[in-house]
Length: 476
Image (cartoon, rainbow, N blue to C red; front, top):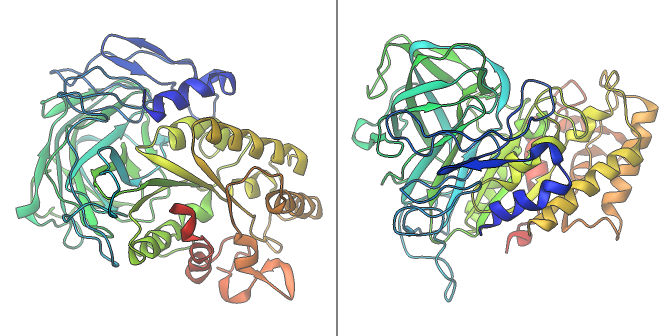
């Protein structure tokens, strides 16, 4: 049993709403609607045209590509290799880890698992598209010799058919390096139907990925009626064009959007990878105050630091702007989405929990007490440890001067930060975002050089300060 399978099973007692059932070759995770608690799991049938892994479910992120039996978190593909397919090799050491080379440190066994190099958290409420091509740009964290993508319909109101899926190196704008273009298949088919609440995982393709680079994923939507699953705050220019033009080098007069639709993960094979770290948070993690297309979210900055240190760890940004620890709203609460957005991520070994509680403390949110938020943190820590993940706690950044600040909220922030810094917290490490960003003369406020202007979100310099506060030795 893989870690992901075990993790979901262990969470049954903590998150009863994430119950799952299995049927046939696919076991599905829980699905949920906008703002609501997740419903029970619903088994997904194989996709039309033989895409056997189309509907692993909203909670089952790690389906293997191939012909093996599918389970939540992934199982064996053809040939019986764990997580599907054979391991590639990858070099590391330097700011831009290459797509090929020898495996990691002497004596270390090569990593044969799929490892995430990019991710975005699914949300409800996206637009529908009909007879249009979406070309979406993702910025990688680690390199790899083989690739696969995951398409999530976790919150879709209807099934969605995705066709003519391509992956390529992005050159600029909506253009790709046509010599790098590869078509992707799902169970050997060029089209896949993803049921509402389901997940489609592509077959492996020999598409080499360079660390810290832009990759374009293009696909054609015949008719996606109703509400689509998307990630709202992409902070990235993505493209929509009429007709099926997924394989085109350039898109003619495309419309642009700032969100990600259906695309949830880009995974790679990298024999030197130590695993992946999930950065779970809200708008600060989502990089809301960073410039569009700059890739200056603090998880991006962390990925650069790891690459420069020669530490091959995938960084998976699971921030949702407006997200909270205890209540659903802008996405499911951190507690409700923890099984999907953390435990089910490919080869996850660490999680950094960041800024969600700030939104719990805002005016109008019902404002739980510090003790209630600490209890929520302890629940996540226990869940991570049961899944054998390292849980890295982040202190909460200052927000006095923002519209949501109050003296009660400030008191609770202090209580949470004191708990995190205490010896009995259960944290496996601390990212002291508070100390990294506050004004020493006014510790309830940002250092002016790090304030984006709204007194709630750090600017790019502040985001870099947060990334610099992460002790890289925690990943050894």
